[in-house]
Length: 98
Image 1 (cartoon, rainbow, N blue to C red):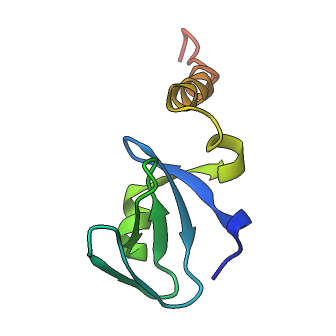
Image 2 (cartoon, rainbow, N blue to C red):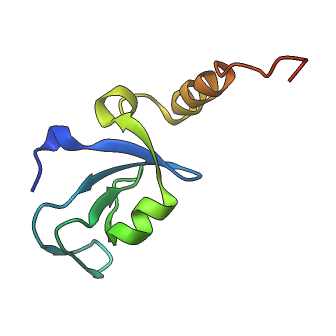
């Protein structure tokens, strides 16, 4: 499996950490649910620390990459939203003639 530094940040409505599996992985979560994934699937960690596995096809269709985890994850939830918002405001606006 990839090293811990290989985590990246992705988003849907919420920010999550994820890394792509390089070998099969199976585990049972705190609620007793079994999770299984193959190489290419994604191990996903939510902000509450819970983990799950998402199939590659579904994950890559839903999630938008934001960058390496060490740039975002140490920030508080409210700060994460502010950082994402600043990036959106930094986009150029269309000119009046366009």
